[in-house]
Amino acid sequence: MDDFETSLLDETPLQSRHSEPDATPAAKRVFIKTFGCQMNVYDSERMSEALQAEGYVETSDASEADLAILNTCHIREKAAEKVYSDLGRLRDIKRDRAKGGKDTLITVAGCVAQAEGEEIVRRAPAVDLVLGSQSYHRLPELLARLRNGESALVETAFPDEDKFQALPDREPAKAASAFLTVQEGCDKFCTFCVVPYTRGMEYSRPVSSLVEEARRLVARGVREVTLLGQNVNGYHGDGPDGRATTLAGLVRHLAAIDGLDRIRYMTSHPRDMSDDLIAAHRDEEKLMPYLHLPFQAGSDRVLAAMNRKHTGADYMRLIERIREARPDIALSTDIIVGFPGETDEDFEATLTLVKEVGFAHAYSFKYSPRPGTPASKMEGQVAEGVKRERLERLQAVIDEGHSRFNRATVGRTLPVLFEKTGRRDGQLVGRSPYLQLVHADAQPDLIGRIIDVEIQAAGANSLSGVIRGSK
Ligand code: 5AD
Ligand code: SF4
Image (tube, rainbow, N blue to C red):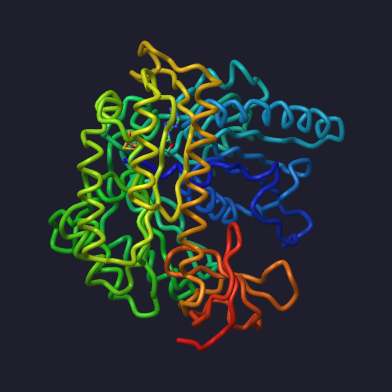
């Protein structure tokens, strides 16, 4: 599917997600930096929880970390290369701390770890542990082996046991909205994509364990879950009756949880957009009217070379059916420019499709050849300057659609789930059903609640409005 990786690709600074006051002065500290998609965000949270059980507290300052973890992304070259520049900085920190008699364990986790394995230790000998994305639950045991004198451990197998089951229960939620990984891996083999090689074949978690995890989140204040998977609408986990359940079936099971008010999912593949999932967008009130559905390119020739197995017309027909079921749905997508062999005419077909659909939001990328993928060996690689120019033109069209969508909500009253305080005093920030950021003046006790907000203005990236009521 398409991914997921989309959205968070803009990396976080070399700071971890949060820093917390020390529980005890002697606590060990872990620094975690997450690259890439929301699935990595979820995995980082689960690793952090496993380490808290071992007495670690999180720090946002790499120079005070006893354990530094880079949770990496391999989807494009730039993301993968950043890991090595960060490793250079961590190596210096490790050396400086060693002068003060302090050890620093450096771990590379995630998709670069999975894809490059031993190569990482060769290129960056300061690394102590390379941890593939299926082995996070083994982190405490592997750290113990490092403390006992082993070095340069590389764990990138796809083990038999289920990492989700083996990880400890989730800690109290800190937010009103949480991610829940329901599916991993992809066997679609789009010719540009490393995911089938790094994350392996599709695997879906069983319904019962997801319902249990969602219940625990809700008991701790979560009102919204986003179901994650590289190919989330290909979900086929075992249901309570032992039979495979579709994503629509999973959504129905989750929607039955009292106190869980909003359900989202990403990322989907057009070929797995089944009738029952489309119907769920019509019938299931808790399923939010937002769909991230990558189409990658508008030209049928390019789509065929990408092994997407759909045409531009297939995609348009699908969008029509989804809009029949849920007319107000906000659509989002991923697009690649400069795939090998892409001509000006092919690129025009992409622009046309973007204009025809009218996306609320879109992620766009210059094609980046990835080692081991079929497209990286194709003839007709497109020059960097051409890619750059196409990306700029595409982004202008995307931005226009984004503003149009946001402006169209001005004057409407939308239920907003408030998530945190805003930058300005007395201001809260939340999300509309269409995933738009909404600012409003409100008391902090409204965090975690869904409140009607009349939208009064649309900025470049967010909306602002006034409170009208609560639910
Ligand atoms: N080059 C550029 N973009 C890519 N994506 C995946 N692989 C590549 C690549 N080699 C994009 C796709 C996908 C998103 C997560 O990243 O658009 O949907
Ligand atoms: Fe998505 Fe295709 Fe990559 Fe699978 S192979 S994760 S469908 S882009």
